[in-house]
Image (cartoon, rainbow, N blue to C red; front, side, top):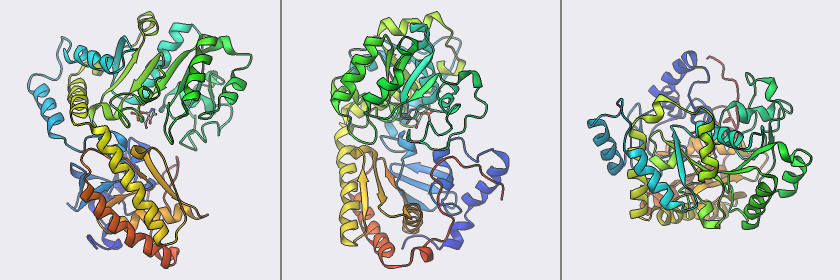
Length: 444
Ligand SMILES: Cc1ncc(COP(=O)(O)O)c(C=O)c1O
């Protein structure tokens, strides 16, 4: 066993700092998915002092191999990638911001259009939620309509959370349960309407009678599983027939299975596609690409922000995408993801634990087929921490993960599944159970 006991984990510098953070920062962190409570309350290391490759060091300088969310999918090449960081340092040395614009914006636009030949114009923001909001604004400006039909997760903005105004669980089943629309104007009620992935009948049912009010249909083209191609084709035909803009949110799926949006694999092109996360290997960058016809409507409204002009984001994105293509990163991460899925499956068979393995290889996940799945998953994370791994129900591989890392992970999973299979779960559960969605945090 690599690290230390539970008592030491509970008193780690990271946990102590997090207790302070909860008093200073409402919700503790800036991203729900990085809350320690989402993994293993009271023991998750919470903060890092250094991250390199697929390794992370906590504030007490303990080293972990990250077999979890890898910067929630952003660090597709691995942490502190030298090529990307060198491009960023060059951009900083030459001035990361000025009264003039940075030329990298144009180079990146060329690169994104080269990868997606159906697209003709590009805008940028610095985070994914912002980019989705821009895409929706452009679609509304273009169609002069208000309503949006959506499936999947698209960020924290008013336009999206509005779907919970009428029916407070509308967003359940769209990835993140329990999202409260407090603070979203009630006037937006009925402007964002959810339907489920791969359910064209539901989409048509929800659109019935309001077809000419629908500005956009926005979906994650694939996420949990491969998308049936027919689904995307039918979406495109339906959007065209009713005059709505079809938006593919590729913030999570982009660059996971190929160089560019996952829609390239299906050969179905939207009117707009949105990217963030992995396009810049963890640097703040997002882009909205689309046809000239639709994107030109960005000029008929006001979409503008100072920090969307800085140089680090585009410089990082160019370096990330070039390396991704040069090193055929897609092939590597698909192989690593498949190998990890196999680790889960073989060890569950070996220790006679029922699990369900799901997801694309590069967005892999597992769950215990048991009523107390969340308790077992919390124990899994705690036991993996003890062995020097950030381990979770999801695994997002990066170019920095090697087969050697997977072998080490295999040995640890073998031991942890053995413990889960043979010891009383309540004895192993030394913390509260991890959260699954949005909870109000209390000061401790
Ligand atoms: C599909 C999708 N859309 C939008 C977002 C929001 O992006 P961000 O967290 O960068 O605002 C995410 C983030 O997880 C996402 O996965």
